[in-house]
Image (tube, rainbow, N blue to C red):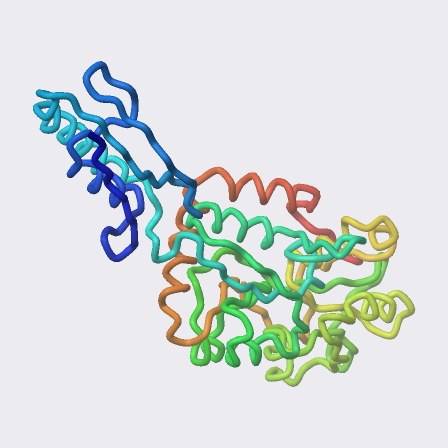
Length: 330
């Protein structure tokens, strides 16, 4: 006669779905799901949402076949150990994280003509998601409100070339650094650079460069929102500004990747006298203060990212066109 063994698998029974399945099968009298000479099994199953097969087994066992139980259970026990080593933890597998970006900062993140958001940081976070087994939802948020939305719980993460500073670290938690940048000055070609005392410099609101220059009280500053980067370049082209202060990856992307800008602008080799020295900065991924679960996931992903060849491939993809050295405007 047939004996039926309904297999019900839940996370409460075991830390991973496959382990739960094997543990149940190992307790049945027929532990093989393929046809044997002395045991005939039929399988009725479906795919779970994690891709593993859940079985309801009906077994027809002939007299004397129970002695196979021990050896098969031993084999499955070994498989159980190996399976658990390679499966992602259910604490993070399949979790959806909502990322807020500001897609006006090429080549880190920007929009194509059809509205698709692309860039170095976008490719990077997809690599992290693949390594850690989480899903991604991306929302484009104005820079002026991006941190407020994080505190209000509108999204889990801010990924927007955010420099790690003491002031920001007091309000938010940062991942390990994933990119280093410097502040550079974009000027018109063939422009002689003298002292900048009293000269007009274009800077971007809420940026670390703006905060540093404002504290130095040396340069006059015209403020632009991050969304107005093209407007700032227009003002520089007609001579309203002496220069624009930008993060190095963005400055190189605008100056050397656009033909019309390449003919008009360049990057000063040194910060002219009159603007305080600006230190290099490190970008980090931002989460709400105390959100250690998401922070741990991101840091694990970043470690895998740095240890793999993917980081070098993405840098080649997004920054290979940028020169190693810059020229002066003199």
